[in-house]
Image (cartoon, rainbow, N blue to C red):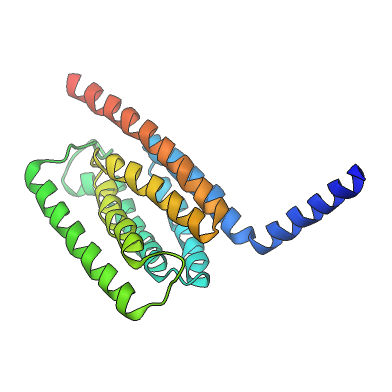
Length: 213
């Protein structure tokens, strides 16, 4: 009886993996992405292009159109991130080619907050009026999408406080994905939330160390 149960479990697991292999691949590549981000490795952007392209397909198939557009944005901003992290310093005639970690100043913080609000209301309105996605309330999806847009731009400029946005976005998104049945993705974003806390403290240590040099 136990052997039959084991065989049934293995068969169900195998069938589930066959049906969700693309999402699982995306989960693994995203974990590599955030590891490289914590380590401040510019190769994170290459991995980001691959993982983002995967989730464009995953979310489009599930009709999460705002998240799908978000991941298209991730692909584009990853190209911008490659430039910022590898070439912007050279273009400024700086012999140090590594982009330094920066803190968010008040003026930029106000601008980014305003951009976040405009994106949130705009995306929420479009989802509510023109897209039928019953699994996630439109303004919940809009909130995660808007903040992710802003946080990714901050990452491209290596602004420390981007981690604070990701901590909220990742835990919030984990709940949304669990709610909608994307369980591997939900687990991924829960781990993301934990790693975002680690990332903030790692980057803060690097920033404080650089100030002392």
